[in-house]
Image 1 (cartoon, rainbow, N blue to C red):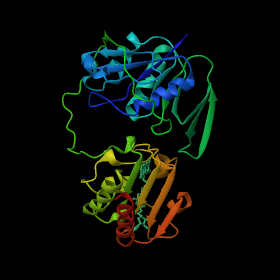
Image 2 (image 1 turned 90 degrees about the horizontal axis):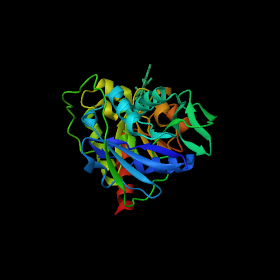
Image 3 (image 1 turned 60 degrees about the horizontal axis):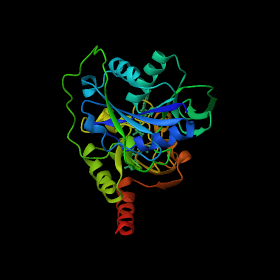
Length: 308
Ligand SMILES: Cc1cc2nc3c(=O)[nH]c(=O)nc-3n(C[C@H](O)[C@H](O)[C@H](O)COP(=O)(O)OP(=O)(O)OC[C@H]3O[C@@H](n4cnc5c(N)ncnc54)[C@H](O)[C@@H]3O)c2cc1C
């Protein structure tokens, strides 16, 4: 039986939860799923077993200490078996996928949201249309987060393999903003704020709501560009992160096409905007025409009541 290689999504040296969704995608593609965990320490793969995965390869190399596209592609290409390759459609893994496809002479299909045998569907033109392509033979496929049901955890049969890669560039230091908040790219519920929040300090109201319902906090580009306190890591949209939560609450966000590009595939969209003609309402399942100052306390209280 051919094998389907899953590249584990790594977050700070730890296998990210979205990896479980990649297992489901790999099973849909066919072939025996093999999970490759890029790591500097084989122990990172110890808890990386999932139901349906035939084996786990801990690809151990110093190159995996920080992301270097060329070195990662070389190291993974050197140890991963032939077959389909599946990775998460995060900005880093999409980059890696393209490089692996080039190295292996395989087609690459990015941002897949459904797999039906060899038919892969992904949004195109900033989400305005869906494209279905048929792949014949092996391909490199990236899959958006939150579109596949996660596979259950299971015991792993882990083999540690030394992977080498020629490091062309090195990241000397990563200075991360101290934040314990959930990343929007992995969240199932997102509360996002735009320029309509008025000032960055008002994002605390969104954080309070997010804490109540277990959500991540996102932002429009206008908010990120206007206020230094709102980091780019929170930006949702064409030049930010693509998200696919079950619930997206847009607060003081107009709904520009570039913002929609990153969140229009959310299952349910709720918009709070004082302008009844704001474009976001054309895409919202539920719309509240009011200022956030009026609407958020009512919504927060109602949700807090439901959660208690
Ligand atoms: C190449 C390119 C890439 C881009 N990429 C992105 C991207 O990745 N992500 C992104 O978001 N944008 C992106 N943009 C920018 C995009 O075009 C918009 O400018 C941006 O999304 C607008 O952000 P906003 O809705 O927060 O701000 P605004 O357009 O200023 O809208 C603010 C909204 O808040 C409402 N409002 C004001 N006060 C209140 C209040 N008190 N209560 C409730 N509502 C209120 C207003 O009615 C308005 O609808 C990109 C643009 C370009 C050209």
